[in-house]
Image (cartoon, rainbow, N blue to C red; front, side, top):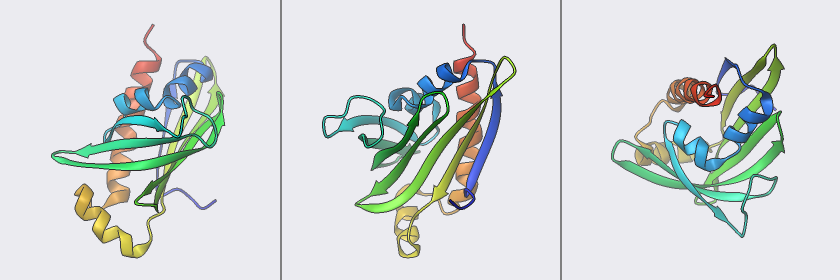
Length: 154
């Protein structure tokens, strides 16, 4: 796989299984993320496993849009990832890698922009984001800070 278009890392004073439980729960992830704000399972799915799909609801200011995500990696305590599509068109891949470190773990959140060139303009009009990689770097930093705070709560 190529290098991610945006990434961030953070040390978290919580065990990898706890952190994985947070990032692999689309409901919790919506509480932590900056643009992603809600979800519902599709096709009878009820949990995070490879192949499960969910409709994500996203927002930025007054702008709202939805996507469909398919979970591609669900390795408990190690990696959670999903591919995002809009109108059947590839949009992105989001991945959370969790590595044990000392009394806790290090989490790396990464994303790859998968939009075809012709789809970047129309999708930017919908989302209001013209510099997607810069926006994703800032969003990742926010999500990781919130994840750390949530995971380290007693």
